[in-house]
Length: 203
Image (spheres, helix red, strand yellow):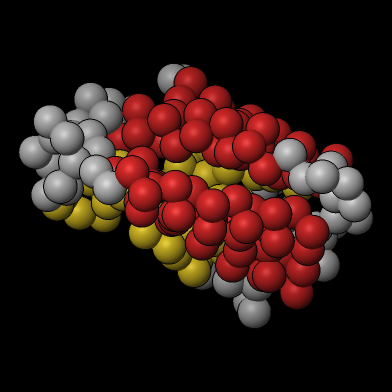
């Protein structure tokens, strides 16, 4: 079944602008927008986005050369997920990614710890929201928002790595709900996902 037909979450990212980041030994980089389908419509190209900062500068090595407007798309759900539940998950998960990115970029160690703790709280809330659903990375594709179609990718390595890490982070939290949640274990996976997203945007 195609990604368009599935009622699943698809996390999509798009390099949207070049900017300057006050990070150590880093003069510039990209804003990455992590976007989620707007569940108020059936159109998978209606997206709600949150910014994630990536401290690298690159030339979109991994983008399809014939589709510079394409967005990397991650499919996380193999089964039906209630749209309202998916929307709430998207909100929490997106905030978690944004906070985690900020924690990676700040020079202030105390602030980094605070942002990381807040990110962990958002990821835990996201896992609680989808506690009855089994998460599992189900594919990576390039989304063409102009023509409304999906493209394959012969070199999806960073995207695949990011997708597996994000899904594993949520799974770790789901498996420890009702006990002592393994937030640090999950954050290690989300850290790995962040590094892969950085690589995806890099040369």
